[in-house]
Image 1 (cartoon, rainbow, N blue to C red):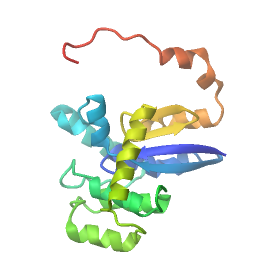
Image 2: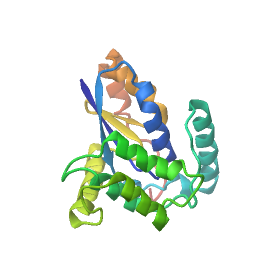
Image 3: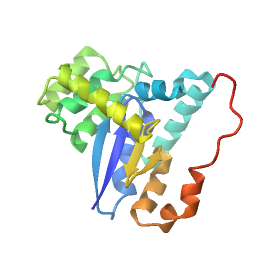
Image 4: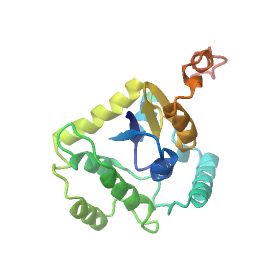
Amino acid sequence: MKTVTFWFDVVSPYAWLAFDRLPQALAGISHVVDHRPVLFAGLLGAWGQKGPAEIEPKRAWTYRQVAWLARQQGTTLELPQPHPFNPLALQRLALACAPANGLPNRRVVEHLFRHVWCRGGADPNDPQALAALVDALQPVRDAQSAEVKEELRASTEAARVAGVFGVPTFECEGRLFWGQDALPMLCASLQGDPWFDSAEWHAAGRQPGGVRRRGA
């Protein structure tokens, strides 16, 4: 049985689409999924990137594309207001639902994603809605504790060290697969496609850099 690490932040619609699609995409493959919360904003800062919603034309395209993708795969996706929002409380809650240094299970992660993407566009940080979510999940630890806060920071840093630059990212056997559209690649790798151990795979990742923008 192979372990797939799913690095996620519930702020990402692509992460929700990938999470919902994952069981179907990997059907018939012996695997287990580790759900690892991170802060997408922390990764963006670490790599000097802007988020999709910070570039106006890309923002419009992103929302149109995820709406189409959700329709294509049969996943409910209702854009929350506002978006982007601060996902800190939800990411900490994910970890608070697991023992110290543990990971949230799929049920917990699904609750969190549905809280964001399946409530008719409501604010994910609405205090009453958050209180109801906490009541439903019954976390075993205080999400505002120093312990949980440090675990989320450490998880984000571990993702950066592993080379994760965006969410969702899947990691398996030392390989990273970024994005909802990488699910077929992940599946092929898990099924033992020899291309992933070929010279072509390794050479593609070692392509030398070209012209760089001034200041980049």
